[in-house]
Image (tube, rainbow, N blue to C red; front, side):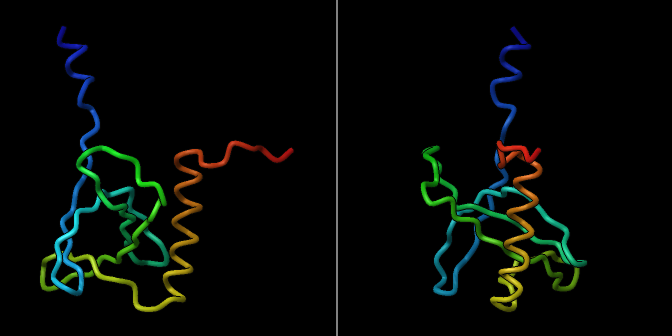
Length: 105
């Protein structure tokens, strides 16, 4: 019986509560972390505590910075950085989680 119950809750998502520019608190689930061009980036998706699927597949990308000894997540500096990192993140996730079913021969 221990084997069955231990496998029931194997996945516990990493949930982060972030504050937007208007002071609203929003919950996000960590999808993965990407180290790219010497920086650490977090890929997050809006968290639904009801367990519903995020229909639009929104991926929010934030950069890791340190303020004293505290790690913080901040928005990216420019649209160009967002495009570069976003593309790298999508390729990373596709490779890691098998996002492409077709094989080139």
